[in-house]
Amino acid sequence: MTADLAFASLREHRRLLRHGSLSARELAESCLRRIESIDGGLGAFEAVAADRALRQAGNSQAALMGAGDARPLLGVPVAVKADFDIAGQVTTHGSAANRRPAQRSAAAVRLLEAAGAVVTGTTRMAELAQWPFTESADRCGSPSTRQDTSQPSPRSHEDGHPRLGEDDLTRGSPGD
Image (cartoon, rainbow, N blue to C red):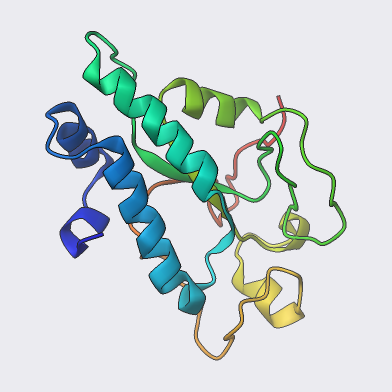
């Protein structure tokens, strides 16, 4: 992912996709490459769902090539906080306690996908959302601990794409 594309707004991603300047698969692959190249140092992602993202991107591209699909997030990659259920994936809530895959995606994730979003994976969080920021979990040694805790956790989206759920007191409800 070029720096320009990585830091482009959701609106710009939409524009590029709608005008055919970029395919949904190219955008998803670009995001996945960027995650792979920088997440080792950031530790932002708990799990990357590359196969799922590429499948969703392929479906999005087919819809983009057809006429009249006006879904607002069609082909746009997003990441989801680890406290939102994604069908078939373990919802950890930043903890090692749960290892059973979710049977159904959370309502917010279903709405994102219905709007055409491409889910790239889940991002880390403080264990069981005990703190309003992930850094506390790093100091307490929870399963969301980054490999390199000598550097502060990033507060911005260095990987360049939107997220559902943030490290703040207003996190979304994971349930239906």
